[in-house]
Length: 243
Ligand SMILES: C[S@@+](CC[C@H](N)C(=O)[O-])C[C@H]1O[C@@H](n2cnc3c(N)ncnc32)[C@H](O)[C@@H]1O
Image 1 (cartoon, rainbow, N blue to C red):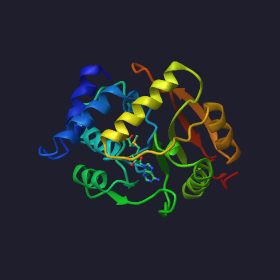
Image 2 (tube, rainbow, N blue to C red):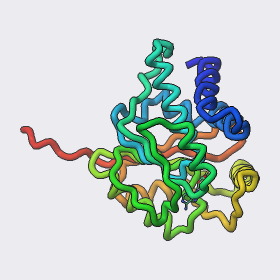
Image 3 (cartoon, rainbow, N blue to C red):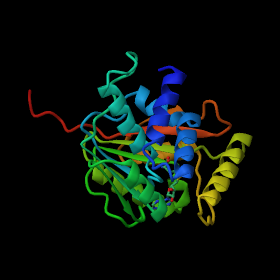
């Protein structure tokens, strides 16, 4: 997909936020075009058609806005041949702490999307085929991270996929920049942050493997100064009963 095409798609997604919400529109456009994770999810077809998606710490619903814009664009016949068709979802649910962001996500959504204001440490996950957690788990403590991941596994069941983006903790300059920018943006968005609970990538991978996930890791910082990685963690499909 050309950079130009993705920029026009990002703007289409950003326009799902009302014009009076200038901050939300520009934030969505900026994030979609600067952060490589969103184009990657579409290019790799990581979210299958007809999936029930659960977005934990969904913020203002940027992923949902992008998937809806992508589906519209594909339906209009304007979609690059090299990319898989964007998924038409069975449903998309988001759980987000910040009321203002939940409102924004609802505005940018459609009838198949729903966003609740809640804490992922206590809100029921229901059942899902794909769980997405982008840049969220380091806000909750280590024991809570383990508990959320266990509950994600149970919500997914056989064949489910967790798409998790984390910062790779180390002494590197990239990691220090990741944390500094994270703190600045969260403050700008009205959060009061205590400490962050980051971990090295290898530890995230090990903990997911112990929960029964098969994990693939892709660096996810291209074009940015950050130390981010995307983990696509899959549970084994249910064994076939056929011989
Ligand atoms: C860096 S933002 C990422 C938002 C979104 N995942 C995205 O990629 O656009 C992290 C989000 O996680 C939310 N969050 C942090 N802790 C949370 C919790 N315990 N329960 C629900 N949401 C939480 C924050 O309010 C914030 O919107």
